[in-house]
Length: 244
Image (tube, rainbow, N blue to C red; front, side, top):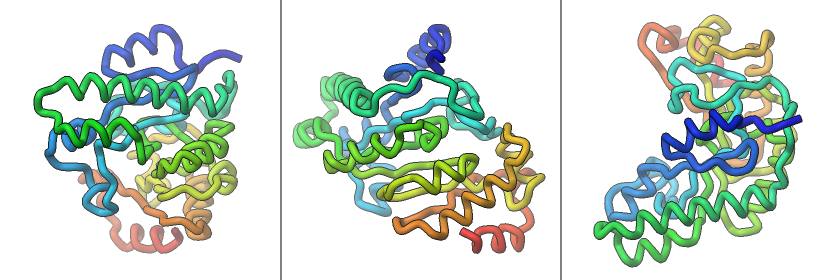
């Protein structure tokens, strides 16, 4: 066993503003956190659900992913993995270090003359964790414990999955909101947009979509659409999304 994040990769990620946590996790300041700290706008989670962006920590307990999406927000800086062959960090230590690094970043933002005093105080207590930074959160073998620790601290959780680990998804405890990335209305479309690495990627995705329909929490099918790649076949999209 070893760590997912090599020293070279760690240096590259830190050079882009990432805070590496342990051997397989990371946090990174969201631009909306900075924006709301300065009295400007928040992200869609604030508009839709009332979540205060300056009290949100952007995080992943697992930087590795089983897809290489053409639209990846993180420019494929993270590694890929189809199964867990790495050392597993303790969830308690993972959360402690993640919050520690997040708060250190917040303190640096609070030095700005544009940061509002009352929001500085609020930002020093995280109330939401967006498990959507990069990678596949459900593949972390102790993600259930990590989520429990968040909720014990009264930190809400929004978790995003690519739907390539249906068994892990089925075993996931209740989160505040669960997202499934839906990148193609059929097998060929998903292959072109998501570039999944599993040979049975379509079956895995369909199983995950079916699991989504059985979940008790609020669920979301998240679509990232691109012209001439996965934006056509509207009837197929409608039929697919009904499954979830």
